[in-house]
Length: 65
Image (cartoon, one colour):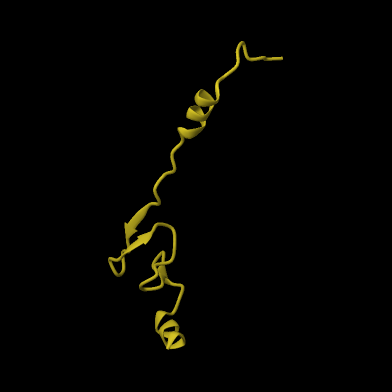
């Protein structure tokens, strides 16, 4: 069984745990309305995904009023 040769200080252990990075979400232009959107998601502005209308935005606007 592997056993550490010496004690690792709190500082060194915390430094090791602190060094990880989150990747930023991929933001791309919508091919239909040219607004910025998250990739692989439905566009919030036009309601399209993969050249198909998924959400009827006109109906959504009527519900909001």
